[in-house]
Amino acid sequence: GAGVSQSPSNKVTEKGKDVELRCDPISGHTALYWYRQSLGQGLEFLIYFQGNSAPDKSGLPSDRFSAERTGGSVSTLTIQRTQQEDSAVYLCASSLVPGELFFGEGSRLTVL
Amino acid sequence: AQSVTQLDSHVSVSEGTPVLLRCNYSSSYSPSLFWYVQHPNKGLQLLLKYTSAATLVKGINGFEAEFKKSETSFHLTKPSAHMSDAAEYFCVQSSGGYQKVTFGTGTKLQVIP
Image (cartoon, rainbow over all chains, first blue to last red; front, top):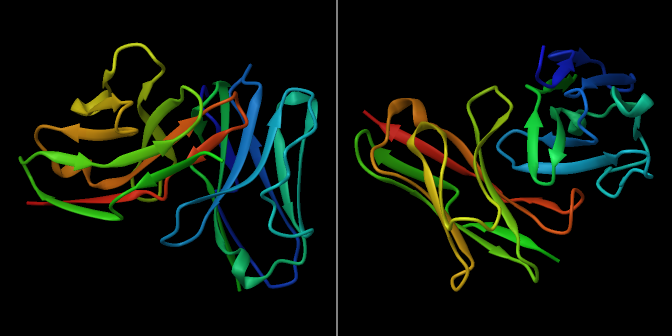
């Protein structure tokens, strides 16, 4: 498909388990963003990748969160030792023009 | 630091009446401004963008926004609300390249039949 693809769309896990969320951006988009959206909240910036530059990790809430982007394309957001407060929708977006972001439909994470 | 303020967290209008969603930005540079819409359980979709061309910007689904530098505003309007417009709307500012993308806190639009 031509859009941003995220998987899984829904993930239910137990507290303490690790999870991986995947984002497949639009081909050719050099910038990739991860955001978190908790129930009733706005978007919380997590991390940003731009080409081969070092990522901007300033939004990651703790060292349990990490992300990588392989080959300038697919990105994986990993949450270790999940906590209940990690429950949220995790949104990925890619961009070719600054500010013009194309979003995936999100991965809904529920930590029991 | 740049910031985006959406003045209303919730707006309720009757179907067929005008919509006004307010947004103020703050930036030292000439910004690029965007409005995004998020329907329930969906990702965000670009509605329209301002990038220093015409100050009145037309977007999808009949929405418009006007850039007013003197007021540092970029309010979103639509002459006549439709039930399908019920969603959350985000005002976004981009300055200084990819990295500086700032989202407002969102406005939930309710359309009453």
